[in-house]
Image (cartoon, rainbow, N blue to C red):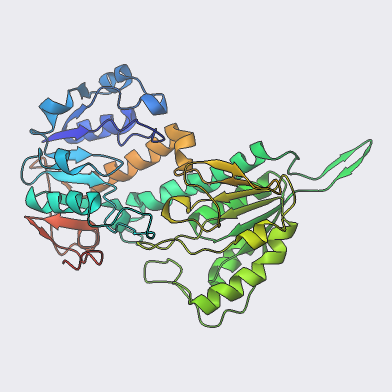
Length: 390
């Protein structure tokens, strides 16, 4: 079987879906591993590194029509999908739920729908890593969590690099410097890593989440939990926070306002799978924060938790608060982000690999495949709420 890894180093995307280490592992399974030249350039992997691991460089035009498995990080465009042979396994992020943010946002029926329809028309097996079940067995394949971990770390280190004061308490001959105050909104994978990182750097950390168990986890890492009575909340069966009502969001915003005003760094990590991010910090709250304070919004690409944040940019408000809305913070540590993502994909292949026949075993009733397969044999095989197909 021919496995091909696409080169996607463009714009702010610097990660790769295959590393020399994973290329070596996959070649050892019996796969013919090929890659597009320049694949690892954004993560400091050279073509020679891949070649030394047993992979071969191959131009896209030659490899795409022949590949049995195509690894990718960003979703392939429709025109590329249509060039893949029927039955090819497309493995990576597929953005199965296009998010329509509002009147100024392109309608979901355009590029996203064309790409997803192309998966069906081309008869590809589309494995969407976003839909990987949150189970113990699938944990080693959970790319969402692996990348969120790094995003939480980078959010803190990036904020620290932009701030005009230090994070830890420091006793000096001229007096004591108080520790920086960091407020984490959303205690998922990214939030927990942000808490751990800020604590390691010596900051005083407060955290909020709608889930009681998440606040307990935050406290176990040394953060102070902000508890706001929102009534009935909870988590989905996949472990994500449930969407709040407008009334609950209003209570949350009011409860957070004082902590935001007193914080040097506020990191927002609240995302809703397949839906626009909830707006949790308004301009009225930002206006109460001190000049030089930092707001990092990990949900900027899906609408943002912070009013006024610009996706992909850093902006400074009139009162001197820096809003950071980088789309993919994990790309700032592309070497480790690539290693983790590539391992997630390699673990998926290894889990379903038949060592005797040197092929992938596909059981439609397997819980991992049932959860992560978006398209197969020319049809949607998983519920697709954006377009009402299944």
